[in-house]
Length: 180
Image (cartoon, rainbow, N blue to C red):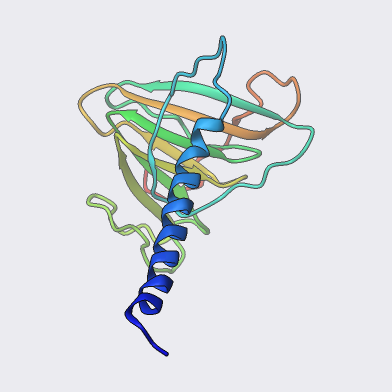
């Protein structure tokens, strides 16, 4: 027999189950342990724009640095043994990445940025405050402040040789691929 009482019991039990689950899930954060004598300061935050990732290797150092580039200032050609994660806190930086042979050899420009010109083996990308990017291990690059104010970058360098001061950066010769 299908009475109105029996038809109403199933939805009532389901509703009660969902209500109980909602109460239980809201109670879980209350069970977390509070911190004591602990504080945290965010040094930088940026939206990742380069779609890259870095491998982390056990037994190597990780270095964090705050970098300031004055207007027109540049990093010089360089690479990083374990790569880098850069967060632009203020200003803007144009990053030139050498991706092959020199300008006198044939190829297609990979630059989508204004002022990139015809440089077939150079990727030119502008990053602004609130953005971040990854430099791959061994990637040869050049960063230039193309803005009108100081550019401040917080960078994390994994894979640095243990105890080597300045080991997060390797100076490189100009590869001749970007016209700078």
